[in-house]
Image (cartoon, rainbow, N blue to C red; front, side, top):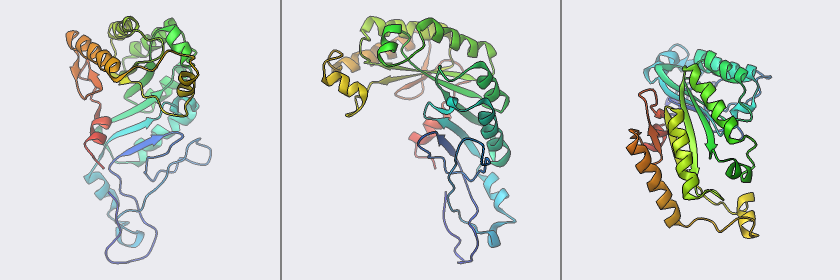
Length: 274
């Protein structure tokens, strides 16, 4: 939702925004928000349809005419920020941007970074959806991926967020990981269901050339990468398991268990929403 004023007037462009995404380490969120020099994050801005001379009196009205429905702090690494930084970013977004009353505000995190202080800071600042990249609960599989938390730690962490009961909890699982047999995959699904999160993502592994996992497979450190047939069978097992437990499928890779989970941001992106 960007453009230039047709009258050719000068001045600095003001911002119109209909959505915001912040991916730490790969900034894509194009929303004009100044968090301050010491906030620990950088947000880019884009030009919009009204300049200072032509739009100063109207831009707030125009912004609110198309309220932002989803805010996503993603990439897995936002939880590496301090509790104060997370609070400052979320508070500023809520104060300075025209959010819809039911705006979905997601924070992605990694278990190793996300301590109780940071979780509480996000919730107090307005986050209403927390997405955690678990990948697998199996300690051996996790160790092969360089994950430091063991199964019991992962379970306790998720239980702690769920007990707060203040935001939708989403768990990301992957299938086709080295050492993740069909039996391990079924146990991953069982544990996830038993924990009772609001949503779950099931992602098949994608071996990207040049990554540590790709190199490890090339030198024979792990067994051969799963075939498409293998991945298809694991996806089907996951889909059938969740359907049998009453989960509703929201997209090809996402399921919801409760009405709290809307998965609004991801659905809007896939639909091409600006």
